[in-house]
Image (tube, rainbow, N blue to C red; front, side, top):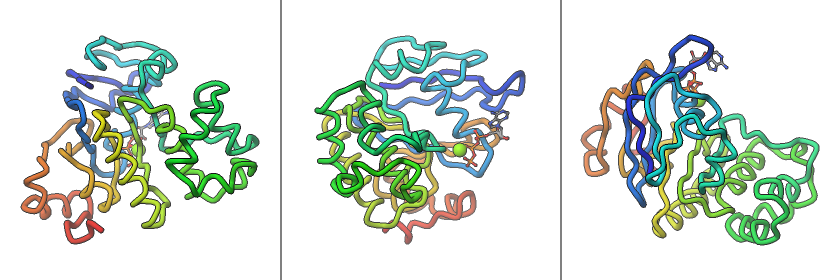
Length: 234
Ligand SMILES: Nc1ncnc2c1ncn2[C@@H]1O[C@H](COP(=O)(O)OP(=O)(O)OP(=O)(O)O)[C@@H](O)[C@H]1O
Ligand SMILES: [Mg+2]
């Protein structure tokens, strides 16, 4: 579904992502974890077209999309939850959702069906939502158009456990239907419940990959790198 090869990218001459190769299969959830500033967000922004790579290749569903603009990548069925959420603060929840895919009532119903807690907030402005509510709105906006690839940058930030469980449930439902996800995240509940594989990022490179069946035995490593503990998984 997603194949990243020898990707180099960054900001005006500064290389942040330094030769990353990763694959996400159909139906798979890959987490990218690593300390602050290692380049997780830069990697995801490059995948969705917000940053043009210096070199390397990005293939989505068999199509070489390297250098494509964000709207073209989004149209392929790629849902993106940015780390800064990018909610329009002066628009209502409903308007924010409608903007995701033009004026489409279907998307709106789907968003409220996936995240019923958003419906009572429908006419509230984005700027009047709590941080957690904004986060849910950003996730709902990305998932409601039923993308085949989710790209999520710390979707569980600021969320109480019931909402983290809701995200787990929704992502599982989508991957069960063959969708794939690449998620940068530090929240242990999300990582341990959803990860098929975990890519450890260090200093712009992938230092290692942990498979799902090795999570328990790798917890020492995960704890030392991230402060994650297998015991924290719920
Ligand atoms: N717009 C920008 N211009 C220049 N440098 C940037 C820009 N955005 C990020 N950087 C730098 O790129 C490096 C990687 O940042 P990035 O946001 O990709 O890290 P991250 O792994 O997502 O961190 P975090 O866990 O804090 O979200 C950092 O040194 C950061 O200061
Ligand atoms: Mg980040």
